Image (cartoon, rainbow, N blue to C red; front, side, top):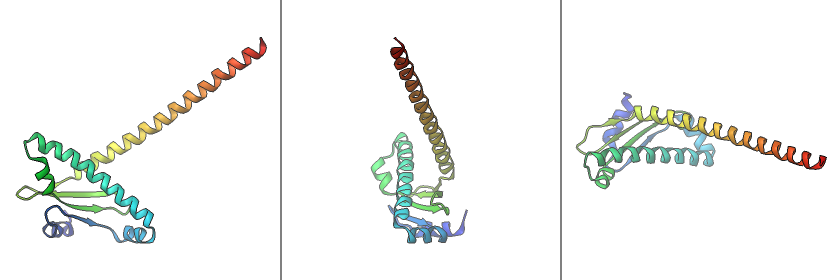
Length: 145
C-alpha cells in the first residue's frame, strides 16, 4: 500500500473525500476545464456505482444504510488518465476496505459494456442494410411489372 494513501486516511474526516491526482493529470485539468469536469463526472459515477454495491451489501447485513453511508470516508487515487487506480473507504469503528478488486471488476464491466455497444451498433447496421436490400428488391420487382 502506498504510504501517501496511508497518511491520508487519518486526515479524511467522516463523510469526506480526498482525491490524489498525479501532477500530469492536474496540469491537463488546469489547462482544460471541460476535461476537468469530465474527470469529476467519471469519479462521481464511479463513487455512485461503488456506493450502490456497498450499501446493498451493508443492507444485507442489517446495517442502517443511511447511517452507514453518512459515516463513510473516501480516498481516491487517480491514474494519469483520471481513472480510479485505487479507492479506500473507511467507516467509523469499521475496518478499512480497500476496493482494488472493485476497481478491476468495474473495468471488466466497462469493457464488456463497450463490447455490447459495439455488437449492438453492428447489429443495427446489418438490420439497416437488410431493410435497404429488401426495399431495393421490392422497388425493382414493382418496376419490372
